[in-house]
Image (cartoon, rainbow, N blue to C red):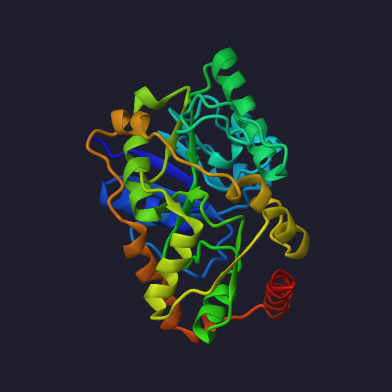
Length: 328
């Protein structure tokens, strides 16, 4: 059997790097299209790389020439115009186009848990999410009207060892190490789902070339839900310290700290996901890496390289102001 020819736009990111490695291990012929500037993760053996810019359709067209692919995956599409260009570029040239959307597109506030693929899409807080919804709308229309062979994948908060999946990153961990209070939004009891990139990749690669995945969305997340206080506690435990937590209303934090709109548009809301659909499409798949294991990878990776232990002094000062205001 001829190996699947897979074009991955991106390929060196948190999710896409794990997906690329696993696709190669599965014997797929993988071509990466990116700008060739990423140095964070080591080069992946067994892939072809072509230089192009996902935000420039002419650059992408030039990079791939007249080639076609069994599967095209775009990890770098964030705006409707990019997706519209992709539909034009890859129509008739691929058997499956996979768009990476976001679970943040689901309605906020969320009316019912667990979240399933049919949960309505609406996010009045975050433009990023609204752009992803608009991208999905284009793909659904292209599938219905032109039989464009699309699959929409919705990850939630996916991480690897390079990412500290808590707002503030190393600055928060540094505060833990110094024994000063950290700030958690709300009362710390809202539920959050964190998915290791290796778990995500095992499900995702099972969707590539899968005819049953065409024409509809699929969410891929862990089945584990943790409170934000528990997430902070796991980081503190991996650092060998206790977490001193101060709770501040999400709206107050968003006004004081520049987290973008991701706090009010996503993290402030409890999320629990039902992954029945992806499990039916990829038999035997289960997320197997608990966050307690993943957090040790993250901490070990950051402690091993001081260059990744960067404190944002302005953010640190903002946390001090929030803690002081709470004390008053």
